[in-house]
Structure formats: structure tokens, C-alpha cells
Length: 109
Image (cartoon, rainbow, N blue to C red; front, side, top):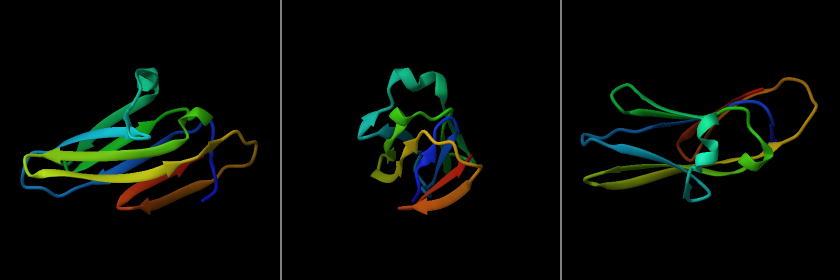
């Protein structure tokens, strides 16, 4: 997969099915998202907490890493990961959408 261009937004989407209330935690490189990202990160859930989104705005090269969605409930937990590679680039506009290990990852730049 080609690198993602700096300055654009990356959206990670995770869908799950569960009869038990579930909470979602997003990680970068197996760590909770850092506070320094707080002003550029939007986290939301839709459709009765079955669809979860992480939007990373104005991506930088330092945002490169493995992003994980961790769903947890009384029954247990499950994870889904996707790798984001951000690179400074001066090429034209590109659009990419793919599913990695069950996580829909959409890029538009």
C-alpha cells in the first residue's frame, strides 16, 4: 500500500456485533492515544454502538504507526488493527479505501 500524504485526514472504522454493551478503546502502537493528538482526533460511535470511527485530522509523519480498535465487554475483548504510513509528498490527489483485518480504513487526499 502506498504511503498516505501528510496534511490529509485518515478515518479508521470498526464495526462490531454484540448483545452485551461494549466499549471501544483506540490505540496507536499498543498505547492509548497521546494527549498531544487530542486537538486532531475525533472519536465517535454510531448505530447503537455497533460502528466506531477514529478520524485523525491533518496527518503528520509522526502519526505513522499501527492503530488498534479494542472492543471490551463483560464477555471479553477483541481487537482490530491497521497500519498507517504518512509521508510528506507533493503529488496529485488520490483516494483509497480498504479493509484490513476487519477494519475499514478510508483515505482521501
